[in-house]
Length: 213
Length: 211
Image (cartoon, rainbow over all chains, first blue to last red; front, top):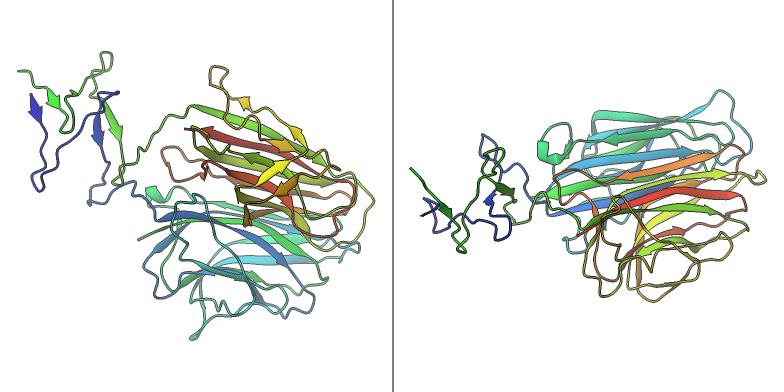
C-alpha cells in the first residue's frame, strides 16, 4: 500500500471517495498549469448610438486595463451587430467600424461608463475600465493610443432595416493560443471610420473576457 | 509485483478501469475545482414574444433560481433574434438588455416548463419561475437588484429588420466559462429603451446546465 508524497511539501495525492480516481492537475511542459483558475470572467454590453455630429474617424467604445493593473485580460468573444433604424437610406454608404487592439489607456472621464458584469457573483470586481461615446468620441490618456492591430471590421449598410454583424470567438484562454491578450496599459476599442450620415445608427452586442493574475 | 495507491486523505484506493486498463483520474485545477463536472441535467427554454402595443421599460422574459434551490445554474447559451412586422417608422436606438438579477420578485406572464435535453434527467429546479410576457402583459418586477445589461439585442422599427445576439459561453472542460446563477439569482430580458412600437418580436432560446 503506497501513498504518493510530494518531494517538496508534506502534501499527498488523493483518490476520489466515490470515483476511486486519482486527482490530477494538468500542466504543460514549460511548467505552467494548463487550466489555471481566472480571477473572474466578465461581460460588458455594447450599445453605441452614433450621432451625425461625430467627427470621424473616432473611437466610440473602449475597454482598458490600467497601467497599474496586476492582471492580464483574455478576450473570449466579441459579438457586434450594426443597426440603421432610419427611414431614408443613404445611397452607396456604409458604416465602417474597426475593432482594434491599442497600446494606451482610454480616458474614462470621457463618455459614459460601461459596467463590467461578473459571470459569477462570487468573482472579484473586474480590473477592466470601459466607456462609450457616439457623439463626441472617447480619448486616450497621455501619451495617447497607438493602434497595434485590427481584429476585424463591422460593415453596416445604410439601408432601411439593414444590419451588419461581426462575431469573434477566441478559443479557450487555457489553450494559450488564438486568443487576444490585453496587458496593463492596453485596450480594445471600436473605431468609427466613415462619416455618420444619420443620427441613431447604432451598434449593439457584448464583449466577454476573463482576467488572470 | 502489486502496488496499491492509497489516498493521502482517506482510506480509498486508486482503481484501474477493467476494460481500458487505464488508471482512473479526475482533473482538478490548482484552486481545487473539478475541470469536468457532470451536471445533474441540461435544459432549454424557448423565447418567443411579439410586442403587441407601444411600450418600453419592461421585463420581457425571465428565468430565476428559487431562494432555496439545491443546485446552481450555469447558462450555456443565449441565442436571440429580433424582427419587425409592424408599420415602419424611424426610431431611436432601442433593444433588449440581458440582465443578471438578484432577489427580484417576478410575476405575471406565462409560466414555461424547461425542456430536458435528455429525458432521463431530473426536472429543472427553475420550473416554477421561468416566465414569458405575452407581448402586452408586462412581467412585473419588484424588489431585489437588477444589474446593468451584460449584452444588448437590438430592435428596429423598419421593414425587413432582423437583429441577432448569440452569447455562446459554453466551453468543454472549462468550469469558468458560463454565467453562473445561485440561489435567488436570475436572468432577465428587459426592454431598456423608449420608442418600442407594435410589431417587434424576439425569438430564440436559452440553454443551461444545473449542478
